Image 1 (cartoon, one colour):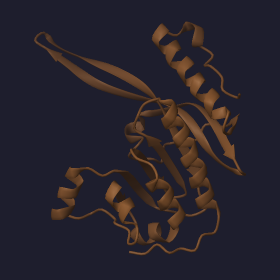
Image 2 (image 1 turned 45 degrees about the horizontal axis):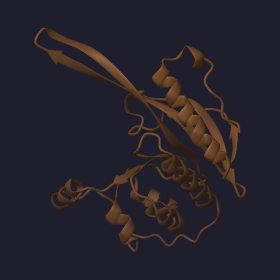
Image 3 (image 1 turned 180 degrees about the vertical axis):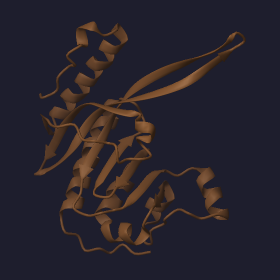
Image 4 (image 1 turned 135 degrees about the vertical axis):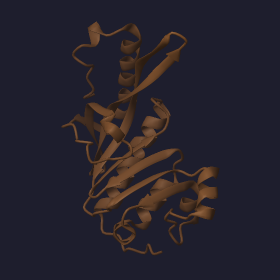
Length: 219
C-alpha cells in the first residue's frame, strides 16, 4: 500500500493520530480494490466554490487506478475561522476537518459549474426565479441535483449521458467544474463506505470523460 503517515505524526495530539490511523485503515481497504500510488498534489486554486477563500489544503494525494482509468484522490484539510462572543468580549477560534476529495482532469472544457443535492429551498427558489440548469431526458438527475453553470452551451457540449448516469447513481455528492478540471466529494467527513464510493465514482468519471461518447444531451 502506498499510503504513508505524515512526517510529524509522532508529535501530533492523540485525537489527530487517531484520525490518521483511521485514514490509513480506509486506504488499506481502497488498496484491496484499486491500484494506489503516490502522486503530485494538484492545485485547487481555480475552484471558487468548494475552495472558497482558499480554505482547502491538500495534505496528500494518490493516483487511484482501475481498468486503465485513473483519477487523483486527495486527503484535504478544511479550515474554518469563527468568532466566539461572550459577555466579556469575544475571541477568534478555528477548527479543521479532513475530507477525501476526488480530482480529475478532462479532455473537454465544461466552463464553470457546480452541483449539489437539491433541497426544498432550491425548488421554491426555482419556482420564482429559475437559474438552475435542468437537462432534458435526465429527470432523475435533475430531481436529485441542483446544477448551475456559467456557460450553458459549453457545458451541454461537454457533458454526456455516461457522466450524468454515473452521478445519478450516488447521493450527497458535491461537484465543481473548472474548465478542464473537476473536484468532487461526498458530504460525510471520513467514512469507509463513502471512500469506496468516491473511488468508484472517480473511475467512472475518468472513463466517461476519456472515451468518445455520442453527445445526446440537449436542453
